[in-house]
Image (cartoon, rainbow, N blue to C red; front, side, top):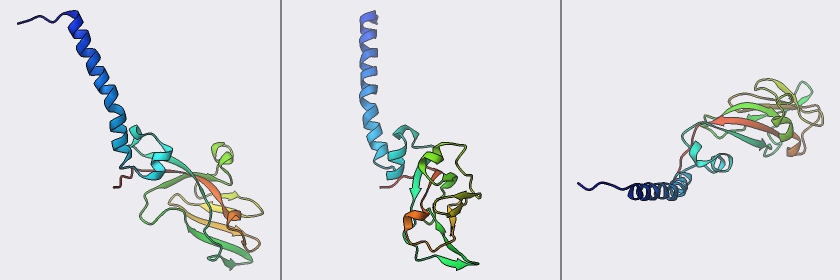
Length: 155
């Protein structure tokens, strides 16, 4: 049996390290190709098997669904798609306020948005926006939120 010299061991270890380093980007591209667009933009491919947090902004699509209740205009809905398992962690009128824990609002609590509007966002994504006046601009009802979601893989 031949004995391995120190030079041959070093050569084999170097080649093994280079093969692993060369393979990592390939694995990353493969994993990323199956991930959801929002998760790709928010987290790295190595976090794919774990729940991830996502910061986003919600702007109501239209104010058509609002109703007048006891003198206030109310707009209700859900920020998540049907069947989503995402959970709201916090929300605020702006992204800057969302990133400041003292100004962020917990799910189920009332937050002041702008122009006299208030909002309640629940953990499941349901929301209720109230205004003393009719909401004529959808952007008046916008807010930022942080949500936790499990991995989503698609073809």
